[in-house]
Image (cartoon, rainbow, N blue to C red):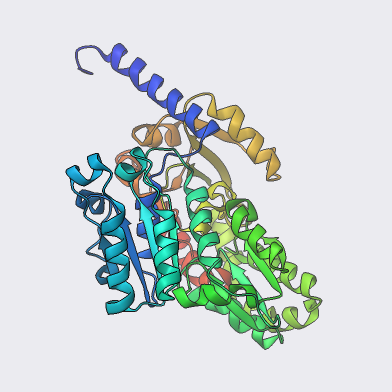
Length: 427
């Protein structure tokens, strides 16, 4: 069709992206909450079970056979006859009782699906009933794919629900670090703060076992990478008596120093934290300056709104976590926003709210255009989601995955390695 009638195909494509942008502006990035929450839980360590309340095909929304929790995923496997007749609660009640008596987990999460939502299945009271009967904590979530929800809203809903499993603490101590990238580099924050006399209660959500959510309310302070990505969780912590503070994504020399500075200032431990981090910062300064001299004046494009992920650090601050690092290395950054022309005004307002009113920005319609647009803005390289790798490489541009950056001072050598290899392609 596109070869015979390219103008028709292009018009339809533009109409589709305009419709998607209107949906994003009103309801958010399309997301099936059941599938997204399933992905978020599949690799979480801990003694819990997940029940998918729906027909057996609802399990095909995600690779339920992968991940460390795969054996603890269950389904009510409702038949068409049961759904049409509304006979859905007895199978759920039976499964939950079996889990409580035979499996005996620390908790059970029940996720709704599209079929039970279509028939307005009142399954929450059954979950509460069996929980009270057996003494096993059980939580019902009316998830499905029939209503659009932004990824950040979906994740926030899940994390706020997990936090509800915790009991009020007898006393508060230490801090929570929320929204940090996964991996060992984030453990640097725990080591630095504890060396400065600040106990760390937990790193949420990416470093956290399921049972750690039961103690999330024990901390006196929570330092959150972009509270706007987890407003429900943040409010839950405030309601529980914690002080909640916004901090940046700690990627690169400047943002890492700023992160520790904000934590130290809010806790009244700035001098101790600066003492604990001084050597870590100095260890990278010489290499940082050397690479800055190589990268100065180069143009790098950042592809935004292309990523579907459950990692809150990649969703925080509109995906601009690495912006300050790239600027700090002397590069000119051009933000490329995926969406229809109307996205320009929307995202410009967001950049201004984030303090980047002067940021150069362009809009492109979809991944197929990214290589062309990056070339047109004079980019020497592109940072974007892996979904666009092929089209970027076909345009002859080197690329770094937006999920490749590592946090804190511990991640700087890795980040500089990536950028040095990039610089090598230009010589």
